[in-house]
Image 1 (spheres, rainbow, N blue to C red):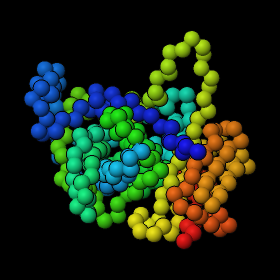
Image 2: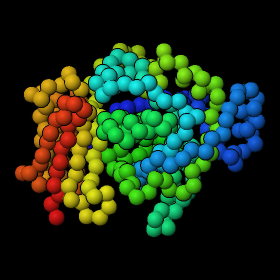
Image 3: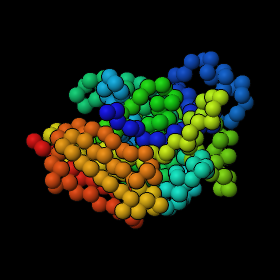
Image 4: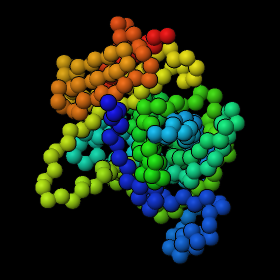
Length: 299
């Protein structure tokens, strides 16, 4: 059965229009276009934050995403975990916006010297501190980043197969970003939301499309990140509207199914290794509205 991906969408115009990024060695045509727009901009060199390793689908090519920091990009307004969950499940999820700058892809060697594609994504340092400390915001942010890369460069990433590197803050040399000053001023208006998440446009059809149930946001991690897997950890965002009695979790030797009694779409995916379903540990943390499912691997 095909795995369900996380259902967070991001309008590519956030990066393409509101925060144009131009590499130092960009072609003259692009530079002239920016000058023609007569929009003030600044070139910034971000500093390292952390690096995420993931893979493309279906060819399983390695991709690194450097999450880097610069004060030139504004910080989203500070909201709580509960507010984030309410926004994601509201009729207008675009009421919260995350400003970010997505750079062009380049080729860099990994630790084994094998060439891999690398992207730099710059954000505000204060927001970086938040996603470092909060699993819910980190999961949300990485989902938005992956969706943004997919929309901008037209490829597919494996949403459940990624690792935050522990010993590397970045791969290769971080590239400079050119950011339009007018957008920074716009984001400084605190009365406006600061991360924009816009669903894909509904296809034009003659019939009114049926209402699609929302999908739970989740990710699957392995520990340790490299070497033999000791256990898998599935993390699900569970809105406060879903009670414990509404959840039905089934873990087989190589498959996980999470049902919420029709409130959300059923989550159903296969696991990358066999697990011991007899000693699976599942905990619902209402402080973070997160369900953690720890599944020891069978060797």
